[in-house]
Structure formats: structure tokens, C-alpha cells
Image (tube, rainbow over all chains, first blue to last red; front, side, top):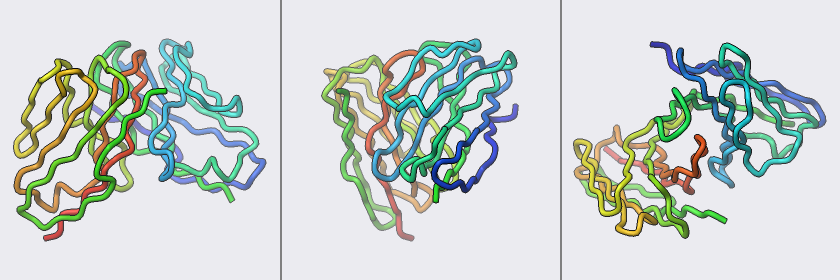
Length: 113
Length: 110
């Protein structure tokens, strides 16, 4: 069974631009969570989608948004990029809500210049 | 505000040595998970502990959940170079929201 895939793996943008990252969950998984990982702040929860609905949101500004499609694939968008948005963005998929194991993808490394 | 602090932040040891990593919280979690992350990859789940006082073993790794479910420890016996990585504890904050600790970067020198 294929794991969680994220595209692209690496991305370089400049300040003020916007970016869209994609996450394809494990087949049959309906929940997708997004996390930001930086050396200073560690891994921080962005938001979680389940059946195309955002169920939970972390403490990030409105520039960070996401959506989920009917096939459970998810995208996250960051508008008006700032230098501090440089990070590894990870998504994780879960079969359902609750305490199911989250399976992480390899991440998208975003660099903002 | 929930806070999960791990110690030590960095650890460099010789192959064959034992080590313990600590994860301490100011909050009670319904469950706590330990992950290992290698460069260029996402975290991979090692274990989930649910019951206060629970001890789980995974080969040379021993995980313990504190009685009050606010702290946990990971003990590695006879560390090997393959154990090198970033170890993360994470508390279950509900609705597939994991609250991650600050991380411990372990290097095992051959």
C-alpha cells in the first residue's frame, strides 16, 4: 500500500508570493492533518481536514489555508509569503478521527527568499 | 498553553551505550506517542502509550508513561548507529491534532 505522498518535495519562493502544496493520503484514509516544522518552533499543528471539512485549526495566521477534495487529497496554501514561512511542511493521514495512527509524508521543504 | 519539553535537546553517544530521553508536560494527555524522524523524511511512529504507569518495549527501546500521564521517557539500551535521528514525543490533543515536543536529536557514533 502506497504511503502518504507530498508534492513538490522542494520549493523556492520569494517574499510576497503565494504557494500551494499538495498531499495525497494513504488509500482509504479520510483525515489529513498539516504541520509546520522549523528548527526554532519544532513541529506545529496547522489544521486538519476530514471528509472535506476543516475540523480543527492551529494557531496560525489566516495566510495559511487549506482544503480537501472528495478523494481525500488535500492542499494547503500560503499567501503573501514571509521569510519566516521557510519550513518543512508535513502532512499526515489517518483512517478516521480519534486516536488512529497518523502516517506522515516526507514533507515539502519550502524556502522563502 | 500546552507545553511538551524534551531533554536533552542534543545527545551524542558511543555505540553500545545506554541513554534516556525525557518528555515532560504541564498538561495531561489522553495518550502520548513517540516518533523518530530521519533527515528528509516525516516522523515515523514508534509507540503509543495510553495508561498511566504503562511500560512498553520495542526491542532495545523501552517507553514509560508517567502515573499522572504528564510525562514519559524513552530508554535505549546498547545504542546503535541506526538509532541516530530526531526523537519526538507528541501528546494527543484530540481530532487528529498532535502536540509535539521540542525534540531530542540523537547521534550514535560507531
